[in-house]
Image 1 (spheres, protein in one colour):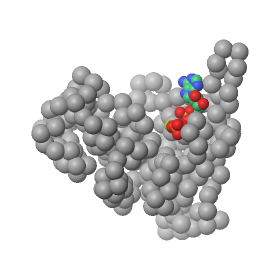
Image 2: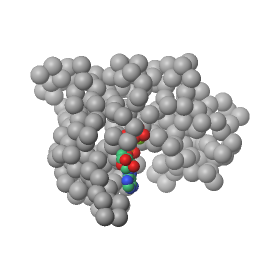
Image 3: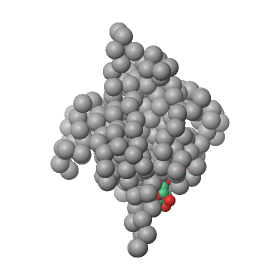
Length: 237
Ligand SMILES: Nc1ncnc2c1ncn2[C@@H]1O[C@H](COP(=O)(O)OP(=O)(O)OP(=O)(O)O)[C@@H](O)[C@H]1O
Ligand SMILES: [Mg+2]
């Protein structure tokens, strides 16, 4: 299959993420709605995978399952040979902090922390403060946040600025896997192009990216695109 040949590493594919038999439904009173039905996904290291699909299809739910943020009813998720659902909460939290960057659709910036503190937070207890701060400043500049905004609280930022800060935060630990939930949704075309350049750099460094997007031009930059529809993933094109 084409997909297999695209990411070979000395003839052997190195799998970064493997999800098997993932199912998830939400229960609303008497009714249960199945969002993910027996999903299988295997993602080679260093690839860019795009997930598209209609609003409400379950894209965010899928990303949350892949990151171990929500537990699926059935199935397994393995990242770098670690089976996420076997970890306890603390181990899972540590694993996520070190290996997974997540750009949330609604940013999830902490409202009482400044821009720079939000970016530093994932590693604040692990690393020398000065070095961490320098790296956070560099990342913020890279995503186009001006220095005069570093001390501002998230409430004083525009939607696009919040999104850039969320992107900087997701990259602070140099994650092996970057999960992006509509990372260009609030950006104008020029900012979107800056963002996709940044994602390309991330990929060039060998990091693996999963991007959820409604934007076909963003999808075109990836190695493979899946459509999530009625709980099932289908490879497109
Ligand atoms: N915690 C929850 N409790 C109940 N239902 C939920 C919950 N989270 C999501 N859902 C439902 O699951 C479905 C999928 O939601 P999800 O946010 O994953 O969709 P999406 O594909 O990301 O949509 P969008 O493109 O609008 O972001 C929706 O019908 C939503 O209402
Ligand atoms: Mg969503």
